[in-house]
Picture (cartoon, rainbow, N blue to C red):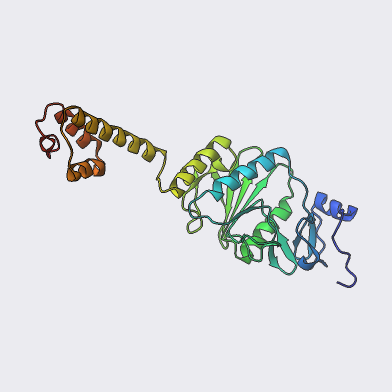
Length: 275
């Protein structure tokens, strides 16, 4: 673009100063998304350059945890970390975590995420954060979750046209139509809570409701096996219909009653009678 210095290469002192004091010249800035390439250390806000600096240890660890917790949700296909989203010709934003709008292609995402997650440490650029939230929502993002890592840990929930809501530990975040499962606030920053959510999500992807369902099925299968072995030891052979009845039974009390009768019954039919 004539008269405009490209942003490639090391950030100049002016851009570092803009980052430090949250300085924003009036009007639309001179820069455009077409001047950037993936890997350049900048976001753009209405043509103004924002230096995107490396994350600190806590920030980086937490947004990896949160990203993994959201990526495993059974309803989710597309999740990215620090993906640049083109919101308009002069605006490029890279949320810490993006759910949706992240197809498996090279280059910047050409649509906004459906859910964006931002992690914030103490001393962050609050003015730019506020602009970023507005720009994402204006472009079509349905939800923005701002995770506060310093002080009172909390998540600020933003939707277009609504006042922000603060959620704290012990509460559940919901994203209808985006996520199937509610997300405990702690799962976005606490390793144990995140892993518990990931386990549930992965089990559901495999067709199992949760860990309790696996344990319940284990108890049922153990009871079926005891019943079959007891009948076999007593020389009582199962026919096809009887074997199928045992396999289909999902009531532990019924299996226990059959097992009790199997010790003395004269036939399989007597052991498996109703009541």
